[in-house]
Length: 411
Ligand code: ARG
Image (cartoon, rainbow, N blue to C red; front, side, top):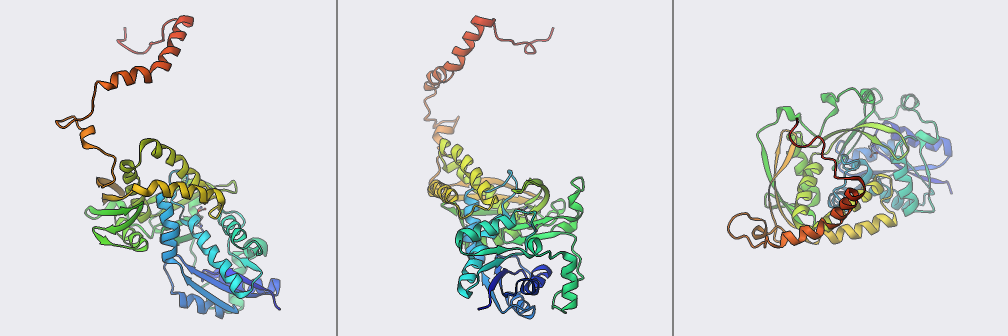
């Protein structure tokens, strides 16, 4: 039987050419698999037909938008997933769900190999191949751009020579990856890190400098995930889509960083994730009122480690699963409402309300109703400060009084 290869198909030039390119280079039949994670653009049927027109023996399209929103974006929200404190893991979380569909298709169509369109310089090749190896250890991976010398120029020549139904002239200077959680833009003039992003870099967000009137939204969370916006029940996907529109109109969620890739390269990236950034701001604040202090401190460390694992392509790893279990347990009481003002590039929390809050007005108040026994603070401070005080007394015994120079009245 002829060998079969499943190709992660986007519908764009590179993967359209890859269909014939892989077939010629390997003698295998190519099955194109397109996974919709809310990247927008053409219909799945158009993409499917193009794959067949480009020579795929089978083409399979999957609408994974709800699955992606519920099982990939929501865990990222619960982990407040921001790589290098800034990047909400947009591409990093789409690779595992796409990989899952690729492996399922490979098993369904009896393929031995999975192919993807990544270069050899980025994180995405690692995320695809580590996920694929984990979910389908029997499968091999190839990347035509990396392994079969499929360069951009060759792709254009090939598409023209074979009259493939794909645009070869449209020259986008950027490399873009987008899904419902956000949009990543790199290359072109952004590679000079002194250059600021120009207006044409952005698509999910409007210019925050010309923002419309403030938009106030109330997000209702149940155990760390949004379940209603302004009182209207929403699915995870609807919550992200609606907040992308509303926060995007205010220019919320633009990010411009030089990022540390797993492969050791520092790269300039511009992201837009209006819904994700608005939701993370709200979720964090809800955690502030519902998580106990030590739990919240420790969760920050767990969140960061979780984020690094996910960025590094370890979505399906045992440690990631262990950290998920911890994070899930912490979300038990992360329920309630956050009132958020979206305006001019910012998502600002205005109000919080929760049945499971640990905020106690009577403990916090300086007005009547105070139930906190202030007299117990003295003894607490004496003991709490005792070890530092003892060490300081030793210092004074051996080396004299503490140096207070620079403080006090200058003579
Ligand atoms: N650097 C980001 C990441 O590794 C985004 C990569 C997205 N790819 C792209 N073609 N812009 O997650």
